[in-house]
Length: 181
Image 1 (tube, helix red, strand yellow):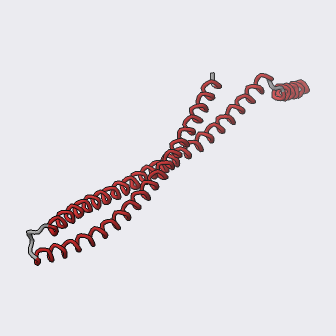
Image 2 (image 1 turned 180 degrees about the vertical axis):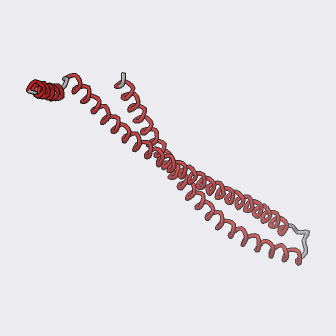
Image 3 (image 1 turned 180 degrees about the horizontal axis):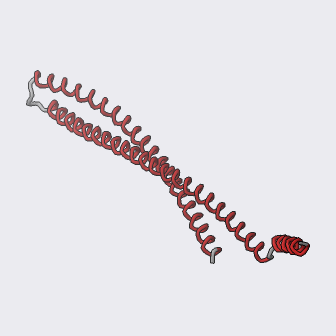
């Protein structure tokens, strides 16, 4: 029985000694794997943040492109209104000149001259009104052009930010590719 007892004790001692010993190569491998897992977690976190930022920038870019489109449309409308007013003013000026020439003609009777003078007075009032409208449309056009330039500048800034983010991601990808080789 002593033999069995001695054999059991020896086997237990042998098992404890075997488990207590660790291979130094295994420990280094585990440490390297742990470092790699930590680096992968950090890379995943960085990529997730970069993806979220790029999505936000893309949404802002789309919104800003729409704002530029609206500002461009307002500028086009202001220019169209100004052109119409200027065209109408030119016609009224031509009508005034024509009536002035007719009023100066000796062929017309007094009644005709009186009618022409009344028409001239109406044309001159309309001309003053059109000149006032033209100034307002010019002011709107200038304001719309300034607004368009401001919106285009914001759009350009967003595009620059997106380009910088793209380059940063590209460089990060290159570092990751060269680090894994």
